[in-house]
Length: 282
Image (cartoon, rainbow, N blue to C red; front, side, top):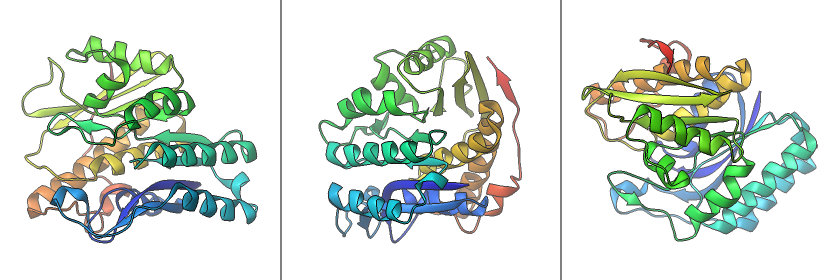
């Protein structure tokens, strides 16, 4: 399996491609990473150094890959944080180029907009670009609950409301929607839910809620879900596998008291999770 992953990158820590690439490689995937930024560390520290790359640089790198004659071997495109609408356009051009060479290729987008604690933290125009251009183009969309509400304009306070919001997104393009963190009315205080909608059904996995606040987990779960779904074609199975691996990763990180997720130290969780959780149709 070959995946073109177009995301941000940090030298220290694990977010963007620094969180997504290695777990996919650990699962035996060949990853072609294209970085949209090269930062010293993630922005959650409040200070960082390094450049934001221009959209034309992304186009040039993808064009060079195409000149190797290998886009027909690309099974999926994965994208995350978009620094600008222009970068988003370059990503969609890459998706179109891959699909022209391989019509079966999947496009999985993590539509990064914000979260409950911080609100919207992307630049003006990104939210509208994701809603109007990216949602219709994606095969798989992996919003968090905050992003699900923003993209649909619908609430997701209950499981039924979340299911309706997932269906509303699917009606606009994506065949699969993964909600990477959901706290609904029936979610216990000590739990957190992951939801996946596919083929008219919604599936749920509930894991224990950990006392941890780190960056990069969403990038990792999107990558893992994409790989498992592309290989097996089952959203339920992909949900269970991705949830188990990310829970194991975060549990190891919490036990270590680490500010950064332990992507390397906990790498066995990607191939052999230490705990698994039931997947239920809801």
